[in-house]
Amino acid sequence: MATVVTQTAIPFLFMRGGTSRGPYMNRADLPADRDALSEVLISMVGSGHPLNIDGIGGGDAVTTKVAMLSPSNDEWADVDYLFAQVSVEDRLVDLKPTCGNILVGVGPAAIEMGLVSPAGETSEVRIRAVNTGARISAKVRTDGTSVIYDGDAAIDGVPGTAAPVELQFMDVVGGATGAMFPTGARTDVVDGIEVSCMDVAMPMVIARAEDFRLTGHETVSQLNENTDFFARMEAVRLKAGERMGMGDVSQSVTPKFGLLAPAARGGTAATRYFMPWKCHPSLAVTGSQCLSACLLCPGTVADGMIAEIPSSPARLLLEHPMGMLEVVMTYKHGEDFDVVSAGLVRTARKLAEGRVFVPASVWAGD
Image (cartoon, rainbow, N blue to C red; front, side, top):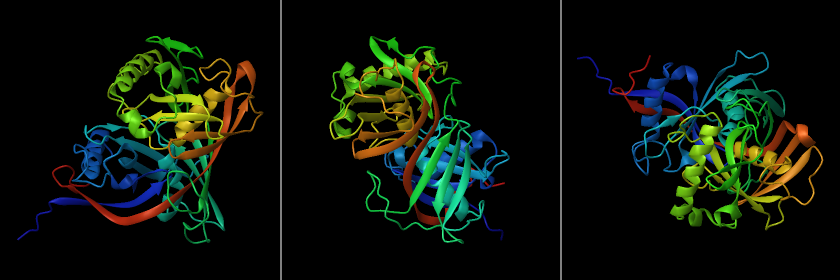
């Protein structure tokens, strides 16, 4: 009697990247067709249930992310990184944005998968973010044959310490919309709220917390429970998305929304980042770059929030709900403001590896 195969096994690494986690997979092990791919990712994560009880998601937007890696045909890059944001409950997959936290694990994962060979004590992995076209250099600690995960680097939002992963982001301007300021203005008024619509590493709508009658220092739970604020914010985000040329964004996680306020804990400024229907527990790596650009650029909603604009390269400490995130921005000053690159140090760790299963009725494999 022939064996009936009821599930399809797909190889994967399960990794924490920065303050997010999820499966890292070889693109060749997944359906080529984007619609079929979405169904596989929905099943794998368990989207459609608040706890993702029938999948490996964690019931939060920072734990329902997927990284897909492949050899790059780009002359500069070693690896192509395709990112998918899978919704917790709505059975949606968004392939428009990228994720900088999950990207932290791409260098180690590429070495683990054999896509890049380690070299010496530090191995550089050159990454092309497929979703946005950005180029990222990741320096990963290695021992010549494998990735080293132990180390003394700490990041707020993650317990303990680990080996640092040094990231340098390039070509981050206009990846989704084609321009740093896709509306053509550094400040717009949408539904009576002043906002800066920017596309630096991540398309964002950025506002001052005080304009929503907030301090900008509220906890994540306080913000998530503030339904009036979310209704107002979403109305602004939807209209701003149209002005940015992104069309109907009601079913898309982009543009993301961010709030800025004066610092209260010795940082450069206080930030709150929205994914967009919940407040991020800390801060997105991509969002940190866009918020930093907003703080540095004259004429935005953040104009005057920093007492003295630092010279390039500028070291910014962004306060977030779980601590601080440091961003080093290399930029051009003044009216011709432009972002050259952004540097961050984060950590990643391999949590598990093996095969994840989806019903054969969803995908029977190639």
